[in-house]
Image 1 (cartoon, rainbow, N blue to C red):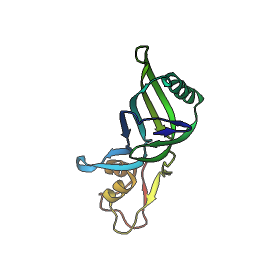
Image 2: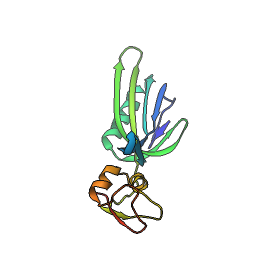
Image 3: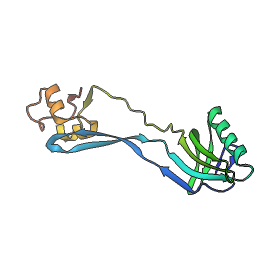
Image 4: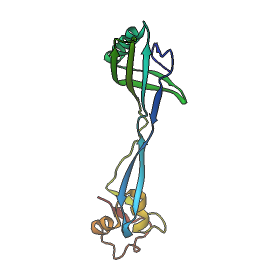
Length: 166
């Protein structure tokens, strides 16, 4: 494993990689939900290991320095493509007996692939659309569409009608 100019002489004994996505859930008619993909959350890499021998203090000091220095760097980790990451946490416990330092770390990916979205207050109905279709497409409830507009039923929307959303 490697971060910036620090190379772990042996990989940490435990590495956890956490990947997730940000989503938005909105209730719609009939108790169903619309789920919208917002963005990828940053990858979190956590781990534990041990430095042994005469160089243990020096390795620990160097990692402490990298954390204090801040800034992003390339993180190379087993079974993960290299990522741009920030060193976000470093804990260690020293033992005079046996020149052993146990450590834990956390890295957080620099993640800027968020989708740009623009929220309009209205949309124009497409051919054969009803309030349910528009609610699903625009992530609003059918009830909200019916409250904001003068439609007699959710099915009385015509192509080209202005549909107020918010």
